Image (cartoon, rainbow, N blue to C red):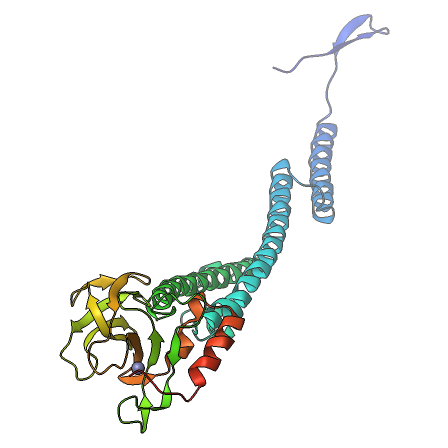
Length: 325
Ligand SMILES: [Zn+2]
């Protein structure tokens, strides 16, 4: 309901209605339409030309994105550190551990191999920051694989160490009789004069001169293979199978206190010195077999000899004297 306005006509001395002119009204309408268009246009221009004006949500997202890039950068730095530590472990693994246990070093290509075949990173493609994410994921995958290779290698080393430990315990490494003054070595391995025929004959063991009843020790861990007197010349004798191709033999015993099949440890008393079989005087005839060949026992006393003591024993064992057989 439009208000009707009046004015006071001083000539007629009466109130008269104010008539609105139609044209003016139309003009006002047009003007207001135009001005609102203009205002809209100006706002549009401002909006298009000044993109810095962001909504709070856009601002928050942008900050989040920047933070993500920063965190990816820090992750990559941490991976650099891990890579350095791992490279050091790998180096020691290849050049110390694997070398020590006679395992082949793992080649670099095998350690640093990525993943071939299908593209594992397809889902990560097509984004503004795909490159950063794919590179980081790739590095992480390679690091993980390197760790798996390294871990397997250490498992193998642990297994080899265990084996080496039992190998070291098994291989003969001490003298079979107590020989603190080193005077018991009567004859060594090599050409010696036969005590009975007096002709040169190859002597396949070492003779330790000792009184009857002197304890004889197992020189390495193993299983008693034989303990009898059914082998020509050796009299009462014991053979210990040490595994790894090694067997030790103890001949001319007065008696023995082990049975075939029995397990013995290095240092266990297995019998006593005597002069049974083809023997000139009480002594222990000691042999070492490697894969059925009799080898020089002189190299198997390292367990309880200093280098100087070894030199003395070596000198005695090399004298081309008469063996006790
Ligand atoms: Zn002998």
